Image: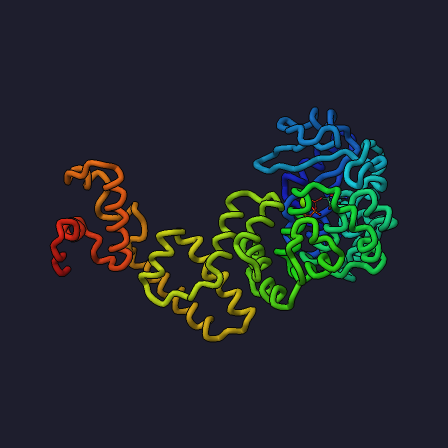
Length: 407
Ligand code: ATP
Ligand code: MG
């Protein structure tokens, strides 16, 4: 059994070996490689202590020295190298009170959350799979390493992680693991919102976003979305219809909500302002009539720009699909085609390309900034209605009250 590693990962493992240490690729990257998925990042586990790792490599960053993690930078790649460790007793369901380094790989694998995440690999040794993760991968099962109740008691975030891996990988949660998750999920309240949000987004953007219904039944959604009364089939259809990425799935999550509620929940989730604004705008316009005129679409492009306009249409499409509204879907096809034409024709939809600028108006004798601003807005409006007006002389003609010459 051979896993193909990036050359930098092989080099880091090789150099650690040469210095007399054990080293393995571990966790998500091994899991993803066995599944034929491209790993997002490659983590390395080793019996070398952080100080020893730092001696071996020229460029390192102290990412989490206290937890044994040093980031090694090699040929344009960053790899987290972590010393084999055992987590000590946990306090308050989230932080181990202490971490202890160990010389034994099996102990390091034993602290990991799920069997599929508890495998290590090196070209020298091959796959190290003390907890039968490979068998669970083949059975498509998420199963805790060890006693699930204990593991969830230690760190309640693992409950949410079980559901997010089930969604990302299209796996089932093993019954014992699921039972323990349901019994203990109240402790998720102790987990920081940032960590909850990171897992929730991965769940929502995965292949089984409908697992949200399980979290709701368990009371977990109460923590970040207490306004959610019931997970209706319409909500699940909306999630399924939305593209599997963050903004689209979040907007779908709020398929039956107002913009205000959506924004409040996004804030509770401590999402960044860019995401909050994007999703809010998508929700704001979800129930608007689908525009049929180019002028209306230019106006949307003027207000939000091309990327956000496309997102608004995409979210309207999610609604139409969730309702199986053929009429709306047809109208959206047309609106999107018109939008493409507007872009391809280079119609002016921004002050940046308006043929008259503020300084032109000033040189025409306008005195106050207010007058200039109002006039530009007036001209912009005219150009959004009729882009052929976007020429200096035609706009000038409008201003001097003459009918613009025919183009
Ligand atoms: P992804 O591809 O989404 O990054 P991952 O499996 O790499 O998935 P990470 O959160 O990056 O997940 O964690 C890396 C590894 O660390 C996991 O595979 C697992 O072995 C271990 N791990 C992470 N979080 C926990 C946790 N809360 N409890 C126990 N082990 C964990
Ligand atoms: Mg990872």
